[in-house]
Length: 462
Image (cartoon, rainbow, N blue to C red; front, side):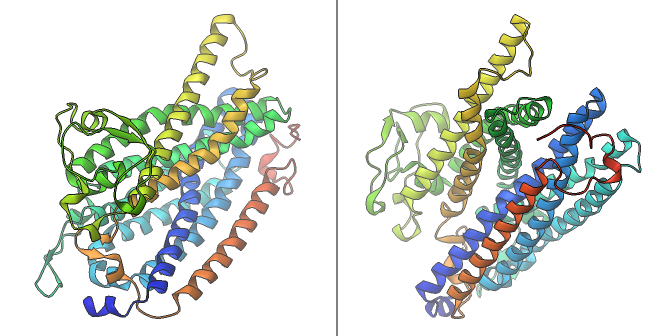
């Protein structure tokens, strides 16, 4: 691989990393919405069947349409990513394709299963009894969660490579695909990602209806459109905080250098403080942050005497960019605490409403709460992107931790910058088209009412 790396130009390497990073950052948001929105749609449909309220049934119809659009868009962006894996990183796929093949193959099966049942679900509104139609949506949720699990297993393997033996010439022997897929990083990463997907879908959907409520559209349709996803997101958030703590402790055991980069720990020792914010100029020392004495040692091992590994344990050329991943991690944690706090406020509001006998769904007089709730959707997306920044940048300079460097995996062919600009143009057009279609679907009569919507077509939504 040394000869390969010698001919790679820095500009092309930067272009390949930028293209892959941008494509992943775009796709991951759509993928999260594609995973969480089916669950919200089924919840709204069940609610509509249970109460007989056309407003809840209309929510299910609208969200199902959006679900179909996002599935199609996600299929396109996912296909682009699969091509980029081979075109931009042949050193990775050519060398380790047989190791990574199993989770990607299983993800393909999950994708087609999701597509089949999505078609059935959208087609069968008026062709099946309501409860039976509701059941046809369950495989969509299951297949979406499985897709996330399989893809994250592949990424987890890049953080904790297992399931193969290398010969002296670098070729592979005794490949064990199941051991590679079910590596030690798979459980914490997959749980963390699945919960993140649900949170992004819930809070993003809720933020749309929070804006509508702020504009005076205080009816059953918009109140349910806000409270249903926001409540589910609030329930998921505490579990995500626990999963995040699990993932951080995992790093302390299996990837201590990544944890050292995240927390800006340069020298191994005990009584290590937890630093909030701060920067590391020149990747030398974390400065200007708020230090909590013994904080990191307590979080890692529950004792102030717990020893935390520092970056100086490895050569400097193996250090990740401390400032970028430290601030990204702090932003992710800070947003998570904001979302948790909003869930506590909502819970307190419901308790107060029950105690005073007021309508639990009433949001009148809670303008400040709704304003913050409207921000929670974009904030959840930012937290998601920050989390992936920590995961990917924290592994640098390795594309496969301790085995293969990024520059040894990139395509040495010139002209990768051209591909970056082309991808940017494609995603710009796809973003504009997606936003346009979703806005059309959100209107009162976005498309001609289908025959199966006779039970909701007269519901007065403006």
